[in-house]
Length: 107
Length: 119
Image (cartoon, rainbow over all chains, first blue to last red; front, side):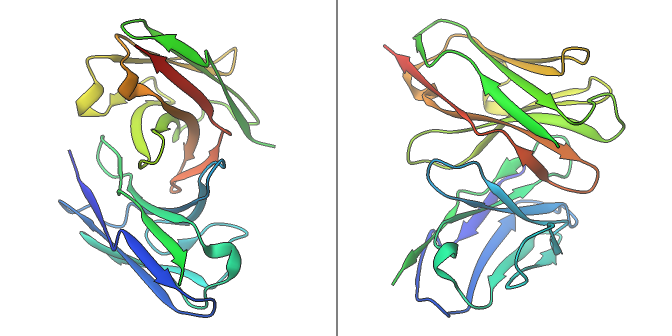
């Protein structure tokens, strides 16, 4: 199965900071990668699909890039509502997988 | 409006079979490129994709659990059912169902249902 590895596991940042989260796939997945925001007690919220396309209604401070095995999620100016856990997910091939998550916490 | 809702027991005993139902509305699972998956999140841990069923009835399971999982759909009832056999306290989690359509990842999620497995 494809393994997805995110880094860092925890990221401490302040409001207004630019933050970048990396996701690596154990084999090439093209651009079949999605990003989600997860808060406690809530369902995951889709942010990005096809590695770099913004889901409807998602603020433009979120962006995604990458292809094949290396991907990034960038938040250009962190807002209070953005403190959450972020997950990448491949949806190439037959067996899908999530990364282990990156928690963005207040510095 | 597209919605999904999970239902099932809040508590099951170890070794029993867990049956979860995802009831959806606003789309048809007969439509090309449509699929519904089950995903879970144990307390304090990461999301884990479990299984998916496609519009053409193709089924896929995560390798680590494939011997214990079974997914099925009833298109007329707008339901997807996940069965997990021989449950263990390690299966305690919030279970989500989610839709995937076309080029998107999981674009619509249910609110999740919490399941505890007692020993």
